[in-house]
Image (tube, rainbow, N blue to C red; front, top):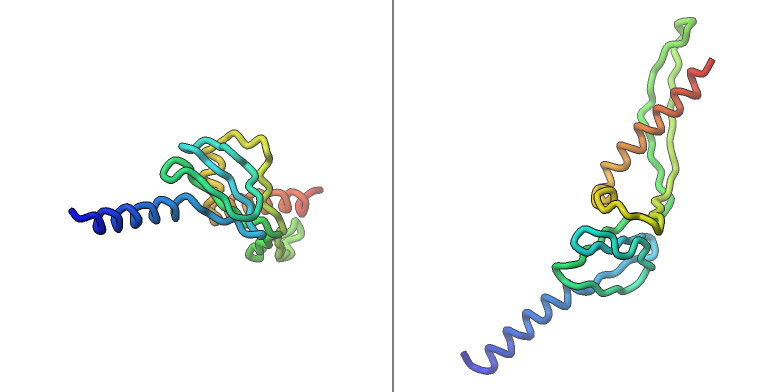
Length: 133
């Protein structure tokens, strides 16, 4: 193998490693740095960051105020009158500095998963308020 081929191969692999080592957290995001699945830094500031390739991983979350709209639900009162309840929830993802449960952080990266869980809690709470005697 000639020197130019060896140098080209080294530059190529160096570029691959460097591109896996650099990541960006935008101003609208929050991030958590994981090392082999364990939380290392639970609140990454927006900007350019570095990590160890293939050892560290990053989970990004939307840090803006999000709105979730539920489907209108139909209920009957004790007088057998129809009641239609339409609701929505506004929330922001906040990752506390004492986050020590990596499994929670790993699963929290799935937006649909936590939105469904949030809506189940929300619907249960407003049902308790609506049907309070």
